[in-house]
Length: 197
Image 1 (cartoon, rainbow, N blue to C red):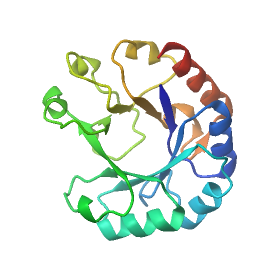
Image 2: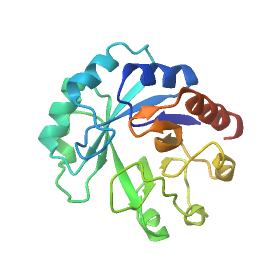
Image 3: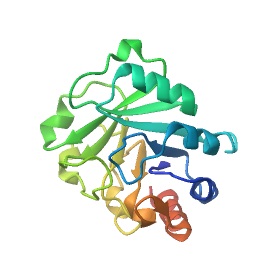
Image 4: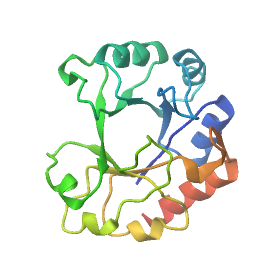
């Protein structure tokens, strides 16, 4: 099991997430988010991280050109893309990408191809709403290429047993406040994830 901690805004939270055992850190490049970080500040964090930690940029309805520009400036290794407006030309991306699927019903999952996807519950806003996908949607579906996000906490991770998700993504459940992580909550979340999943 792999754990991504998203919404990193400062180095202290980043290094505490790494020490807690996170496989990946997420940086939100969506200016309307309370967890937004600009590319220059993200770069300052990324350049101080230890090796073998993946850094991922989150983009919302952003142009192909801006995804390339911001990813290069901040040294992102992966772009996590919400593209509700269908404006991204994936063939012109200069960074590896993963699509976000915001799930309303089971058929949203059934129509996906065999690629890796980050799957999150559909809400009107973007990210950190803490809404969970109905786990019944995943029954009889191969979940081995899904990164599950939305409403996960150390108290409900046991419910994911048996589904075989590739990874999980957490943000609000390990925060003191929006944009600021809680060291103890990160440690508890990652420990629980590795013990039961």
